Amino acid sequence: MNRPTRSNLAVSFRVRLVATAIGIGATLAMAPSASAQFGGRSGMASMFTPDFLPRDLPVFVDALTLEEWQRPILELLIDEYGTNFNTAADGVRSRMGNLKDAAGASPERVVEMISAPLVSWMDEKKKLRDDFLASVRSQLSENQIEQWPRLERALRREKSLPLGELSGESLDLTLVLREVDAPPVALDAAAPALEQYEVRLDETLAARDTALDASVAPLLKAMSSSDVDRGIATQESIMQKRMAVRATQDEGLAAIRDALGGEYGAEFERRAMQKAFPQVYRPDPITPLFEGALALPDIAEEVRTSLTSLQSQFDAEHDVARTALVESYRVSEPREPRRRTEIARQRAAGATVRMGDAPEVEQAKAAREELYEKYRKLLSETLTEEQLQAVPGLSKFTEPDPAQVRAAQQAAELQGGGKNRKPGLGAPVADDAPTSIEKTEPGKPEGGASGGLQTSPDGAGGSPKKKGG
Picture (cartoon, rainbow, N blue to C red):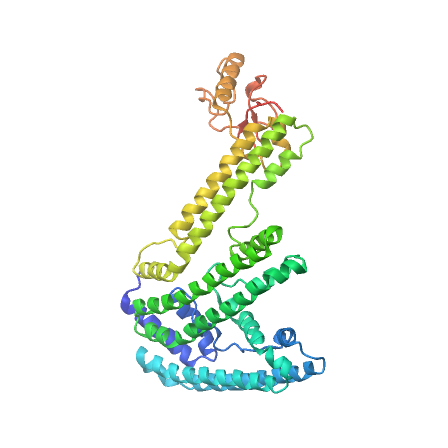
């Protein structure tokens, strides 16, 4: 099998650039290539996306408190903007589609031919946006114009937040606060912190958007010359702006939580963290096992007390494990552009490299799994065999007690003479025993021995009968 060389990669880049130059969906086709090549999203991803759509009407209505008679006017303005945008975008695509002589040009020349209409288009797109907003302002009263900064912040959150790549970067705490059923007095107390968050978030999002737009030309240049270091440096400059957005999210979360106080602050933080790190705060597999065990009707009071205490211990250790996993994402995600690009470079050189998670994340995930296994075992040691079977999902995790395995073997040997019997769990196979081990029916002692080990429902193994309930 032929491995790609640096020269082959350069040819591949040129092919992609030429295809981009003569394709109808020029920048849309190029954006994924540039992002994948250097490990992150650039400004090319949204270059041909309109800034305003009909679905944005509620944002204007809410932020400016528009009158009913103003709504139809705004709808017409949005429609007119959409028509002008599509006409101008089609013109850019047409100009790029005429670059058919790019097939014989060098990669550097292809980039130059592509960059000129793209840079021109970015300026034209900005003018279309500004003209639309000026038309909207002309329809407003003085009181509504005073709300204009609020509208700009709301629009930027609506358009820019989805462009985040870091966990928590795309969080909208204004929406999270609406989900918390806090009383007016608590919301009033949180209002200053919320406004400060909106202003600061708008500043950092604007800085990130500027960095994304400015990345188009450097990334095209890096692609044409196969300059991996330049591509990574461009992505890392964007990453600094992304980290500033996430830092604003963290600061806003803490400030609003503290301002709400008590149960409402805790509920706000819980919802925010679930949205920021859904891969960390998803439902765990152990809590349902505790709930199932505590719901059993025949639990003795001392066992119930033990289970309640055990669940409290799990909750505390689980919080620590989740916090460690969150921190592993915080540390590793900003490094992802360089890590992904390096892996791609190694693969291109012929190495077999697994992408997977970053080492810090894998380590934190492994620690979390160990915690889950620890409490599965502790639960199984607290309940009887019958109780284990009654808790959905728990019995399959139980492990046999070595002492009872030996007792079962001895009982089977005494009754069967050590010959012509099915081997028990972990028992040595007799000389004349069959080469395959048959599964024992659930609840049936192996080897006919009374009080022997029982297998789990899937026949994979047994759990000892022990512990009182």
